[in-house]
Length: 508
View (cartoon, rainbow, N blue to C red):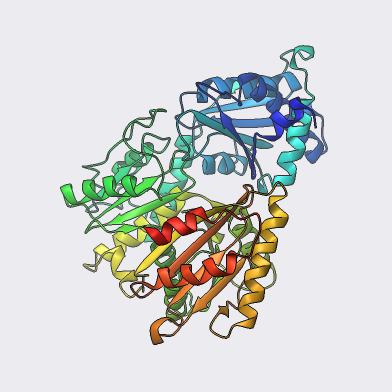
């Protein structure tokens, strides 16, 4: 592979394109964005079976400092290909999909300029059609096509029109709140106090929406877009970000707080007492809400969810279906199950990616929060909080994630061999119980210190990196150490696996 081709391939990040856009070592340039815009216009023309001159593409960005330049460059590329552009300016990733299915906008596809929660110097492009985000193989083909583009040979011919979409998207969210509360009054959230933390990303307008609907928003913070993210990482999984929101909620005695990542496809909440509701707790909360409305449904999650969550979902009358990590994997599996007649209203990752069947299985953190706002309002009228719904969730006493680096060049084969080795060992040892829903890597549960199913680990191969992520949870103190010690002895026989991080965890 040529150096030129290798540089393009390095921009692939799962189903997105990402790279360094500012400072040293820039890999995602404006020239690259021009070529990607051209390639996506041609991709849509072929997909839609019509001339590229009849294609329209929506484009938006989050608050990153490189966003305006990359948006202009991608729009230029679309125009050079002969297609037309609807420039939505500051926007969210879910809104870019909603524009496609909204009458009066309805582009053939859209591009979101974002790198989600990644550092300020990085940026990326997400490509979206009416079927959702492009799959990995489509991104690879798009990269190949972009690498062959020569923009200088193509004049600007398609129109570029500035047309904000966020006001329309805000109205869609407002409609969902009124429907959920069964009212058409102008201010259905009167009496509810919501703290909004946008992390200086694109989601600050949600506070404006809350206020318009009657909610009190005192204590809301970091609403102004600032692509340097000066206050905290815009990431609902980040402990510092959650702690900042928790402090803000308690300071003003709010009913709840909500937090988004930079492009608002992920979210989390904080309860009145400052308790964070993200990861397993967020999955449990949404499961309780949905299963309370219709028991017997299936909740699809990623593979690293806790054993306590499974018990919780079962107790609420549902089925917990663990699947592979990766939000596209989880969403696609939920869609498949529904097609087979298995009612599945929710596909959700512990990262905060959540897609509801009622919302086109779009992973929209802001829509998720909107559903929770409706429930919070209903519960407040009963003198309860969101946290009351998950009071019975059994959470692990200990949890840990370790990343084991793979040193062999053929890292996928080496990783698969290590997983197979652990699987073989588990099959031969009665005290190692292979999970019946083992759909990714190898998940082993243990009966620690005379207990029953009170510890587990999951060893899997990273989708893109030469790494074996290891997740470990225990319901008893000291359980994680017990499992790590046993696993270390098994992995010592595997070549090409760097066990340093595992050894360091045991020495900590």
